[in-house]
Image 1: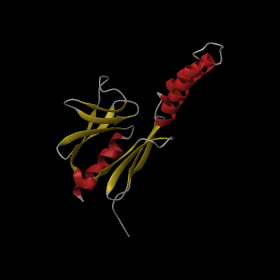
Image 2: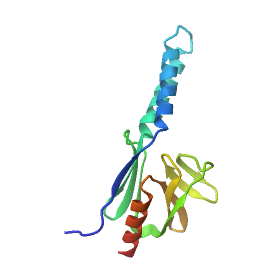
Image 3: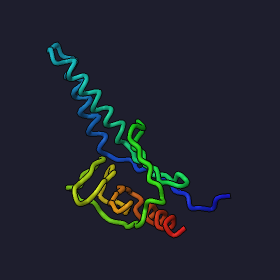
Length: 148
């Protein structure tokens, strides 16, 4: 039986409500008789889809790798083999770092749903940050994986 530590945590954000709200307003506007109603409906659907993609972030131990998945619409996911991680530290992102998935020059990649607490991984010489509302749990789990 595998006695390696297991980890799974899902953070639910709040920003998806903004996307749902904008989508609802655009949907209501598309019900008018104007010639732009098709375009407004399309943009409303896009905003609702973004809200469904960024409602939650699940971080899970996948055996030999850490998996990240935004959801509940499971379009955006990432897998990080533990063998590529050389260091782990608890840190904080800034307002400039923002939320979502993006690369920032000099700071590396960030996958962040909500808040500013994050775990910074050194992966093949590059920084990769994972936003979390379970900073202590995720940091301790990854540090344990590095020791194993």
